[in-house]
Length: 482
Image 1: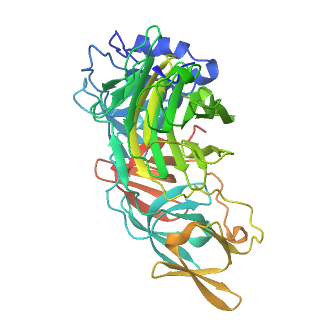
Image 2: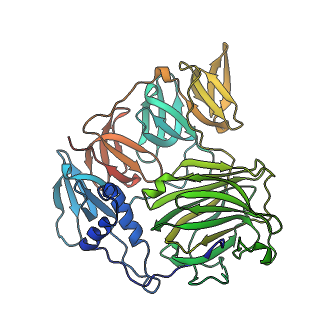
Image 3: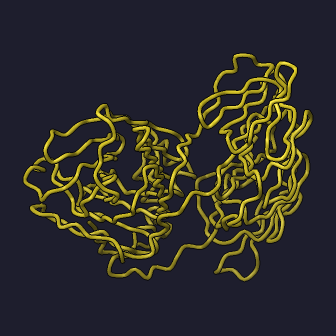
């Protein structure tokens, strides 16, 4: 077993109607019937361009998914009251008109939010599982007011807010890319047939053969490594954490390798994942395994690896969900500050949107059953809790009334606030509502009133009628057919 190995594609991929049908036939029936998964598969296929012909024309910005699974590229022109959708296609001069009831989803090419965040930036989770993000302007017994970049000020009835998740200030950025291979080291893979190199194509690292790519990113004691990953077929990817060697290490014959310091190897072998402690002088140490069952149902994921040397923690997130944490029983022992990506020659892998930052040690804390459903609960950075009626927000501090006294808690020290479940108003799903997914995080459920290039308008049962910046959305999931 070698920790890692590279890639080359020899044919230019062209997606046609016949290609769509053929690609669909490669899936089990339950997946082939899913328009969303089919679209992701096609986009991932298009993401693996030829190494010799890397000048592929990028796909159109938007994709329209019909209920029968058909897929149409183009650009959304508008949606009018009454359910008429107008669609631009490069082969048609005038917008094409469709009935909105024909579609299940629209995938949109959206722009990121502004770089600057408002004060008291939070994620706000609603009782219908929607989530909005913005600056927390005020909070009282009746409402929570949020300042958003996509819809301005939104007043949310407090009884329809489940939780508030304060977001810490942006961490120090160590790497953001990739923008090329400069600064990265290709590994010399010895004794491996059909070995190659990682390639840089269209803003991503790609590999279909055994290959290694490494860089000293000067990882701090607490770090967060995030990236998008797509694959074709299965995959075997090893990620060396806190390594001092930019060359791959043969785990079977590590004693014969040039000197290297101890490091941790995160093994992503679809769908099994594990962490090994690798030291030249000691046997391999397995820290534990887990399974990501969703990897068998998709071919794309957002991965986050968070490490905390002082607390002896390595944590893996997939698509925002915490999958597993590992601790070394002998203490965190790694000798470097570099990262190494080793593709082990199975399937094809693409990595992009790679960001490495410092981490403040916070975990995304899930809601826990309330001991007293009539009381609000705040979880702090140091894992303490504050339980009692939450009165208001004052000068960046949450004010709780406990034992006849007001207790102020800085919002910056809070990881999560869960409002009293006994006071929540249920909002069961209603026919005619669609779900609008934001480009970065969260979604909102509304009845769509209209859409054009400047404004989307809709009505939510949480906050009423509002207008949105249409560029804030990445996907629309329409109401199911009656």
